[in-house]
Figure 1: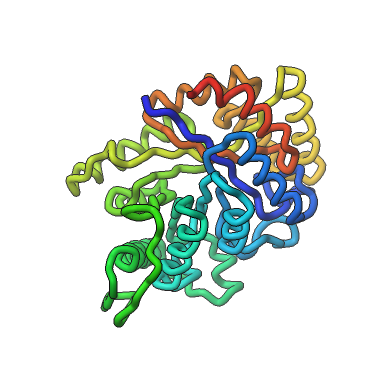
Figure 2: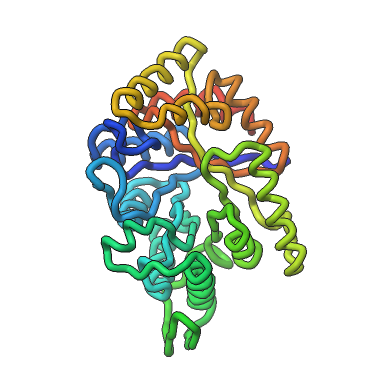
Length: 329
């Protein structure tokens, strides 16, 4: 069994007063909190930091732009990997994105994990003036965009005449520092996106607090796609992303979940998030969290991207690092 890696999602938007379920206790966007939380993750020995790519999200739709934030965190830290969770193909020309990613990998001394996706948040697209085609076309655009990016990372000069993108003598120098290139992660749970994972990804991430059963069902679809295109299914790293709520003991956990339940109840949010998802989340005492992780490891997952529900408090990341991570060395 491969040793798992544990990364942390850095939440770049606030969620207090019922604004977003990822961070119900985060009342006001604060760069100093963002920076200090990221530095604490590095100090505690986490493998990676992850930043989402959205333009409007959370309380008052205030959110730090993802790539700018990721670049800033890469410069503030020294050894922890930095990952895009995940870049929306529609928001930046992929040739430009190749250049941006190559530069970030270079200046971070090879710490970039390149997460990429087809986009989904229609409200954001409309607000910022981007076309929002049907899912199949967005996936086709994403796949062609990734092919452009891979070509620019590999070739000295690229000319390309595709359905969606055209290049003529494009040069992307310096190349990424990692050899042969940064790992590509695609977030997916629907069949056409899972096909894209089989074709192009090094890492497959599935979010939404998937249970072992849910993840296994999607894994079977991915395996079928791999067989159809003669791809080694085991060459794709499996990633789980979801929420964590951990207490030092049962009483501490109950205090934390009670606070979240009060927050959601007061603002009329879906109470089921604090109750129903608890069975699928990594939650409870350290021993209970270890048990849940072991169940996910048993089906082949080796990477975890964790959203700590007590953010921006550093208590959760500390307890997890001290009481859970040492059991998976």
